[in-house]
Amino acid sequence: AAEVVSASPNGLEIRQTVDLTLQPNGAYRAFTSVSSWWDPAHTYSGDANNLSLNPVPGGCFCERNPKAGGGVEHMRVAYVEPGKRIVLTGSLGPLLYEATTGVMDVQIKSTATGTQLTLNYKVAGFAKGGADKLAPIVDRVIGTQVSRLRAYAATQSKN
Image (cartoon, rainbow, N blue to C red; front, side):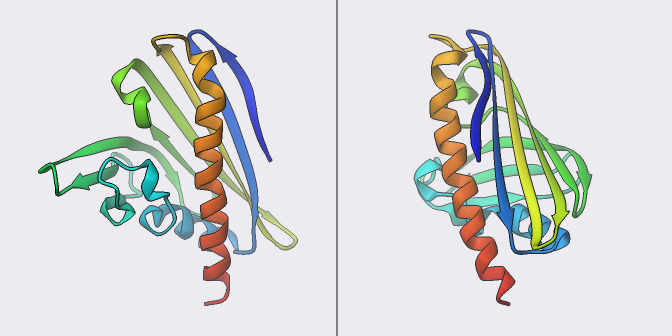
């Protein structure tokens, strides 16, 4: 399930919910293994293997960019409760170049068949042209990532 919860010129909120066949700790491990499921088309380096997520307070969701000799801090970990919740702060993709800040709140809840993972991403600030215009694009990109996470998690439930 995907939805643009709200959108205005100064902010947006999107929510993506997906059912996973993993137990909560497995779903958490799958999410934090970002290089295994993130779409390389939505990286600066063109290679998801350059992504890392250190799931500790202050940890970085970062990307090395060996070709350019640098890297990107996509988000910073603000809150961790393994198997239940992880909260990241920062602005993804082109939002990085705007005067915006974001909060990605990922919650994992146990279900009869595994887990339900809900990713809520809120962005606020000044986005040239208006955040409301970016909301459908951000929703689509995050939706792609969540779909890839679901596919990756399915491979992990067989292990």
